[in-house]
Image (cartoon, rainbow, N blue to C red; front, side, top):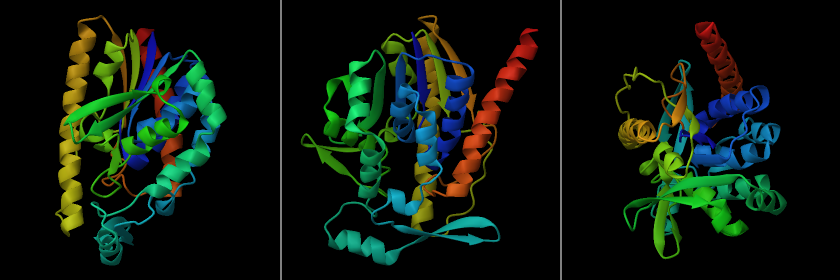
Length: 300
């Protein structure tokens, strides 16, 4: 049983899309399981249907307004570097509305609804492939995995959206009497879950470099500090997920093929830039192709 597993990574999901396109269209990889966290959960429904071009068009056309109904920060370019500042007015508006987070991401849910039709949902649900998204249950302090086989359309749309809600910058969702947030807060890359569900070979796309090689700039404000702290925690969680996944795989003779980003794509994956994401998609495709060529040369 083959599985495609895609980690969280915000806008860097465009790179994962490029890698997936190569694996599915060029290598003709036929997966039985599709598991994703955060941005990975946005990709896997279309990938399971083989609708790569459709999800590519979506990923290479979004901007901040596509994601945020109320964006809590400003993005400015200075000396060619993107810098984040606090949008004090938007944050104040959110708090006056009684929201618990700095920003609101209901636009993202609307985008998901427009992207995945009820017919496409039913096609996946009634088919042989299984699509699973990762969410964090903050009330119960646990990670949960939601399979498309177990829910109706509206519920599964919610789970995809919840998987991507990077609190406290995006919406906190209350569902079934529990508070839910981004799956990456608990599991950045669900390798262990893929092993538990019977995968014998896994293609894992990790939206980070294999070796940590970043020295973050000093925090400029409260938001950049919180972002740095959350990125640090995400890196640690991802590292642990990979080690646990490798350990679980080794005990069941599961093969894992890793696809890391060869370079640091961005230090803030909450910035959604059309041109940048279009470039990352192309780079992901080229990277996977080059990795395959290098592997063939070693075998020869």
